[in-house]
Length: 377
Image 1 (cartoon, rainbow, N blue to C red):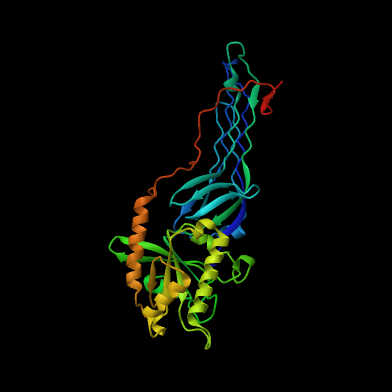
Image 2: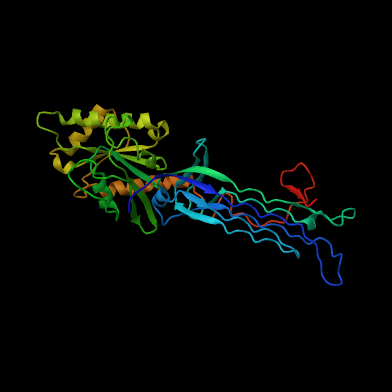
């Protein structure tokens, strides 16, 4: 399935049904009084996060989503039926923005979390609400309220605990294949990975974390080189960034340390230019392809000195698996510590507005200046 992480849609909630002015007229009951019912509520458009969906491709082609209008009220105290809501299922991690103002409206980060994208209009009042001791034959009723209309931009940021960052062909896809059951495409040419891939790394019974692999980043990405910054947003929710360094000897005649340090600094600069918050996230260095070095320990020491790095560093070979288990256990401990410091709510909890329900009718509106107010006179 094609991976799509952005889409623009329009949502139209249903209009509320109109109230009605009616009077009871039956044999032997010539003055039965008002019996006009209320109109039904218009349907709303809802969004629900579903962990079984991982792309917004459905909304790339289905851009208009309309809910039905509520039914009008009828005589004999019959209320109009409310219209059903339209539910849009989106991937977990979807952010909903107002396409016109850019305002962030909802951030659906948990399975089952629900948001009301467009609220349906309330139904109008029938004339039975207007009867009183001084108005026994009311001919007034109100029209249903219009439903909300919005133009929205959906943006997907995948949920992962650890993100892989590095140049093309640094071995990111090979590493995620070695640590998890993910099977991204692997080849000997740049930009083999064209969309994010997620893999679950299980380190022990009941202990695991999610690893995200994004397309490679190159120098000049901020100016549109390569795939640019198109997929860096998917690292925004991670707790730890793994900066993979390809230590394989470059072309003959080049200094392997100088070339690698220059590429590593270019990646860090692109990260800083893209998002200072992402740049400030905990970042570990991973020296990959050490099976191609004669002295991995000496290379690591010299590289860290040239790069000016004093943070966590691991030397691995994603191809042979050397050092990958130690890296996975260290990442699991770091993720567990971060989760304990910032626990996430359970999946079945939600802090977003739930689907609207039919409510008792509001008190009668007798203001003749109200545009929804109508009279039979």
